[in-house]
Length: 134
Image 1 (cartoon, helix red, strand yellow):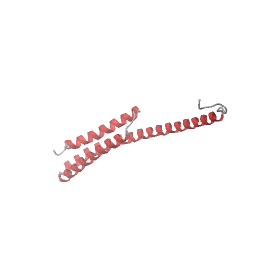
Image 2 (tube, one colour; image 1 turned 90 degrees about the vertical axis):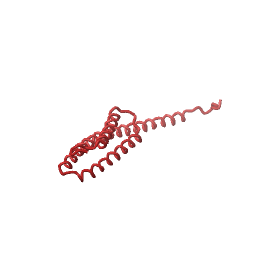
Image 3 (cartoon, one colour; image 1 turned 60 degrees about the vertical axis):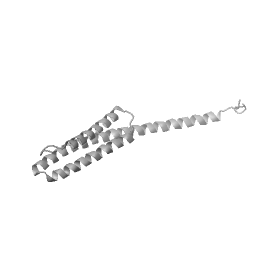
Image 4 (cartoon, helix red, strand yellow; image 1 turned 45 degrees about the horizontal axis):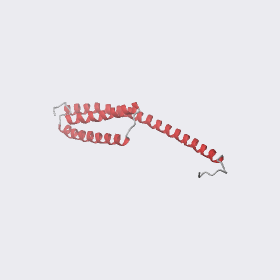
């Protein structure tokens, strides 16, 4: 690692996490059917990798010169700020998705009540003297 460059493993970890965020954000915006278990797995795996790479860089940074350490810190903060901004967008899309699900559940509940109402009316007017068995 040169004085002002992040290790390739950290750059790759940042890029992987950002790509996952973009993929999930695009899926939410497009209204695609989401596999939340897969989403959580991908995100937690990428987060753990990023965390491990940042820990490695932190250990290297402690041994670097003050100027190099400041440059490394600034580069990491810039990438992390971008990730946090993307997370805010993702959180907003997730809230929209959650509200949409809640609305659809409410509509389904109203439909279920309507069907129950039809069942009661139909039972009241059923023929009494006809053989239903055939």
